[in-house]
Image 1 (spheres, rainbow, N blue to C red):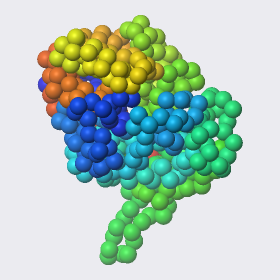
Image 2 (image 1 turned 90 degrees about the horizontal axis):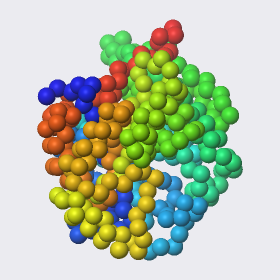
Image 3 (image 1 turned 90 degrees about the vertical axis):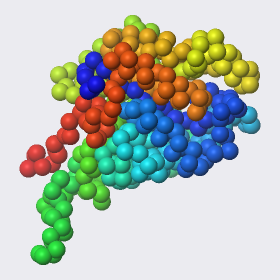
Image 4 (image 1 turned 180 degrees about the horizontal axis):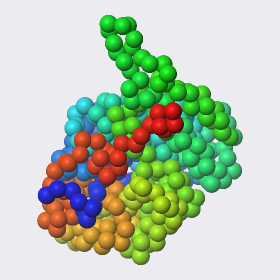
Length: 386
């Protein structure tokens, strides 16, 4: 079955042992391996076995905390993580098709450095790289750097992130596709006229360019952002290829799709809308509810999330995805409550059910992540201008 516009896209968001704070205590969890390459490789290989479009890998610049305003002193939660970009680079050679989208924090990192890291990931993965741009309003994270005063509002942080993405995109275009000559006979490796200064001057960044890494295989790796509401909707609509949104109902799916379309009017390639869902899955609805209750008991509190929480069977989840897809969701980013349990429920239960309904492909049909999402390889802005 070839891919069609009627089919939905599917991704998973990987975060440690899973999204529930007690996930590391699940019988199938592997807490002793969370900081090993094999652990992450196993998860992403399984996601590829399920034909998923991509995985995202969570990251941050402060220890995980239950307290949104700052660090906590809990000892019954997973604390500590590996660098998401380096995880993706390690896993890339072990996979052939699945997209790899690590999270980066724009608030405290430099776009020049990140541009070459993601360009390198695109080369290592042969065109399957992306990046999720995140902001960090936490004073705890800021204290680890001590180089700046945090903006006073989230809107200012997101405006800064928009400039960050613009710098990334200009740097990825700063080498034309045929800038490398590699002519041994004449001794010419590069055509210097096809490298371009980007000369970006903004409130937060001053970047001359060009990049030190040639243009990535995709031309522009995928840029994604989480968009709960304004002004994050504006950032996603104007700067990103993929928006992760958090509707609570099918009605909200349609409303968000309309808002994002209105913020990107007339775009040849509208932003791809992926609805986030935390999933507790089992073979029966009762078993899924029991799993959540058991994890909540271990955590000492009922689990809450910024995204809708689904508890049930893969078939019941397929019903919801089908309804939300018809309302305007391009695809879904599922957050497994525990891994590997809920990831396996997705790959071995949900995917076959979606295929049975002809809502999901039965094989990979594009070589690059852009191609899989129906996005063309963009022309280079500088070669077009010249």
